[in-house]
Image (cartoon, rainbow, N blue to C red; front, side, top):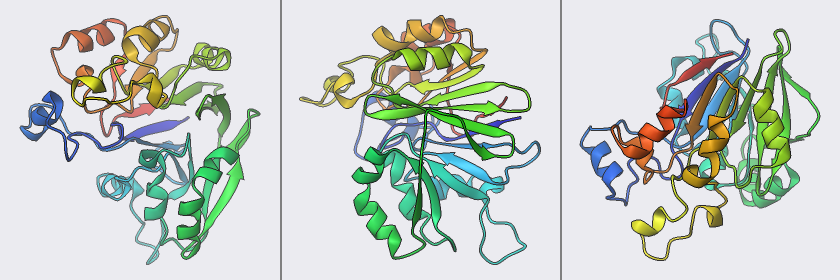
Length: 282
């Protein structure tokens, strides 16, 4: 089996974002919608508790996320230990990689799977962590690799990022994790058709969403995120997966607001909206 736990479901900055007074951030501060930490996912093959857990992206909010999840905390059989075995990076975005710096106190090198491009972009962080535990970089591949236990994984290359497909080798079930998608490629479409669970980029509802709150802001596509409304909604609506979940959701996205027209469209399409702490068992 595969257990997937969403540690953080927000895009960079979280919800509420520290310098934002948009409708959603105001509502989150008022307790009308739940706050969300920045995007990170934990995956494990364990049936009862997370052991040898792997992270998909390492959020700047990782310490807070660990303290909110007892199964990610150190066991009491040693003074220093962690069930976190390593990290798989989808890209070098700050909200996906800064948590690596926060894992620097461990005893042995931190295992990180990433593309050569991502590693090169994170050379500054690599140098910083080298003074502590260091990083053991491992290459990702489009071929299946063993991660831990019955879990296998492969990388699906996308423009500016990768997605990861995971398999439970015992059951043959598949899950797709794609929090940073700029284009619906053939390989991504094929992986989506095969997967029973899909966690997908839900950063922005519309291409010009940020411009409504910040003059001159880049569009969703310029930031390498496919918007929901005219990009991924129909794609996921037609997917045969039994669970489809939007994650990495920006604080400005109207799907976060209960009762909104945009949220209703997502729910009518059979797609869930991620929240911190959501667990999926495959």
